[in-house]
Image 1 (cartoon, rainbow, N blue to C red):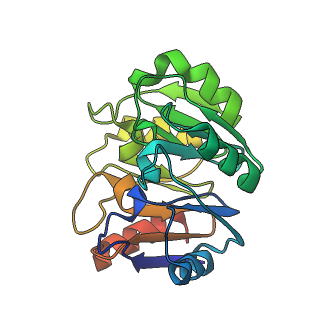
Image 2 (image 1 turned 90 degrees about the horizontal axis):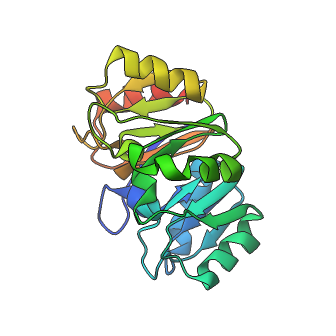
Length: 221
C-alpha cells in the first residue's frame, strides 16, 4: 500500500496508457514485462492483460473500468473486446455513444458513477454494466467529468478549483472522501497522470512532494 511515481514512454501522463481495478491491470500491447512486474507490485494485483483499443495504446481515454465491468469506446474491435472478456472475466461492452474518449467523460468506483452531461442518453447502460447508481454533472463548468475526477473505493481526487457543493455531491454518489488536488506539478486534469485502485496509486513522475501528500490523503493510501 502506498503511492509511487512513474513514467511510461518517457511521459508523466501515465493514466493515458494504463487502466486497473483491484485485481487486474490493462496494459498496451508491447508494454515491457519488467514494467508490468513493477506496476503489479505497486498496485498489488496478480493479473494483467495486454490489449489495444481501436488499434491504439491510449487505453485510459478509451475505456472505463471497475471491479464489476468494463465499458469501451464504440470503435473498439470485436477481437479486442474478446481479449478483455477472456482475461478480465468481467462484462465488457461498447458504450453506445458517438464519443470515443469515454474515459474522459465518466468517473466511477464500485459505489457510483459521475458522468458528463454528454452521456445522459447512456446512463442506463453505464448503470447496468458497472452495477452502480449514476448521476450526470459537469465539474467547474467542464463537461470532461472523467478527466476531472479519479476515484477508488477508498477515496477520490478531484479538479483543484471544484466547489464545495460539487465536492459534497461527488462524495455522496461515490461514498468516499474527495480531495481537490493537482498532478504532475500543477496539471488539473487528474486522469492523465494517475493509475489507482483501493490498495495503491501510481502517479506521473513530475508529481511534486506536496501533491504526493495530498494524493495520499485523497486515496487513503
